[in-house]
Image (tube, rainbow, N blue to C red; front, side):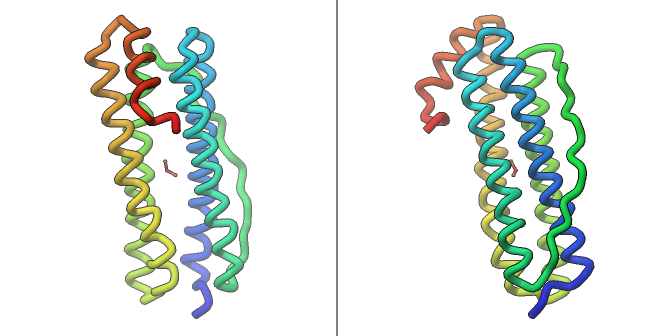
Length: 163
Ligand code: FEO
């Protein structure tokens, strides 16, 4: 079943959302780098690369179901956060927003009885559980570390999140 025009448009929007996520995480990575927090910088650089991969999954899927990819402008990310904790909390809020975007896409695929797109989106539904969980873990660790940011660096280094 070919992709409907409405779902095609929404999947194209999600490419932009995923690439925007990459921008957000790269900006956070740069902030951490500026502060000398090399481990957090590496973690968010890795997260940015994963978001780009997420966008590319949509780029690959859309033509497979006879849709057309239309790339849109990617907005500039917010460059300033008041603290490391504020940046990580913003990452958590961002992942929650992306989860809602994916769920909205799934709802549309269900409404249209587009089973292929439902199967495609299921990977993202599962991925979002992990991504929100990771950011929650980091928010908790950042709160526990407080001003001792090198403790947070050490925690992230041994957490396995950088693998
Ligand atoms: Fe692609 Fe972190 O959502």
